[in-house]
Length: 160
Image 1: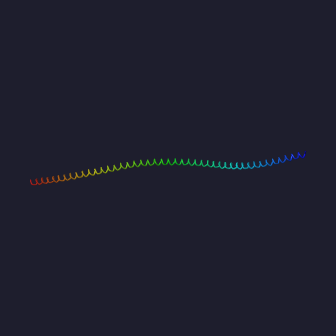
Image 2: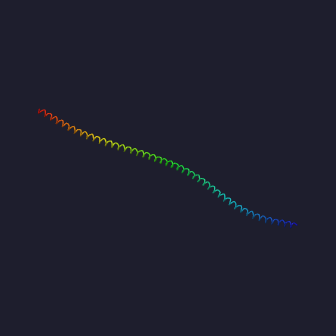
Image 3: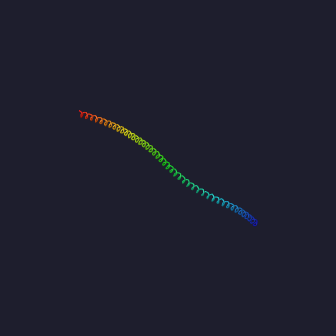
């Protein structure tokens, strides 16, 4: 009876060892699977870290690009204002040029008017000089004629 119990215990022991071997094998398989999962978790964690880093870099790049765009917008505004100022200056200069040309035209007209007046004055003076000369010639002839009369009168007196 003891032997039977011992045989039963040995059988149970063999079954238990067999079960332990099976469970050890399963445990090894589970541990191997767990290691693979942990490796995947580590890989995903690294990928997540890289992705977050990329997002941070992208975010920083985005901020830099936005800042650059703002700077460019400001530069464009400055250039537009400068262009507007140049256009205003051009308009002012054109207006000044027009005014100066008109003033020059008036000055030319005044000069022409003065020349005409000068020519008219010369013409009047020449006419007056000619008239004086003619008057002077007439007077000379009258004086000669008077002198001749006077001479004739004297000679008539002398004769008488």
